[in-house]
Image (cartoon, rainbow, N blue to C red; front, side, top):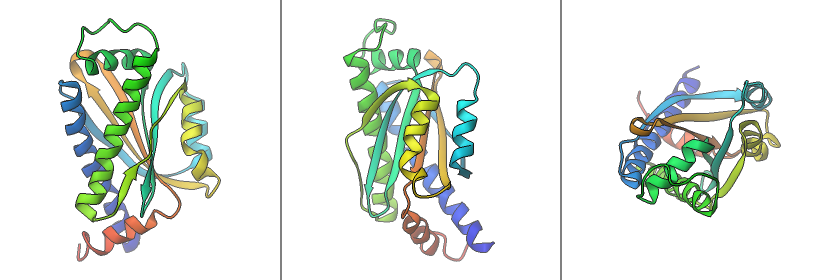
Length: 206
């Protein structure tokens, strides 16, 4: 029980530091205040989580950026938003009048890819600077599909290894433009090394 409690604290520590760093980076990137909140860090059964998302009514068409964060303790990163929000984000990144981008095109793809790359890099920097764990993002993969399909692809590699996974879930909101986005961070099998390291160093004695 004590070990589970320490792991829970370690997960929350990783998540909160990552969310804070990503929020700072995103606000600078779009030159508009972006509030990112840590929703939860939790253990879940992959099949149950996938079924829950697939069962959601009026599933949105989303555009996302999927990044493998490789290193001593690999994680997987997913950023996504519904298609209309991604069009707004594209105009913000390109620093032009919001509303000019009206459909999914090469500029939207490049924008979402860049956001995923920058935010995943910010999370990797948390591991490197705060925990001295070498991490770096691989080139982002842009996905454009319904939410259930995107989520299934996100968890696919881990689902082959085990049934239950730890997921860090965050959401961010750009108030001025009513843009809502979601971030998932998923440890790959073997990333328990990170959690154990943090438990034995940063949380020692707590």
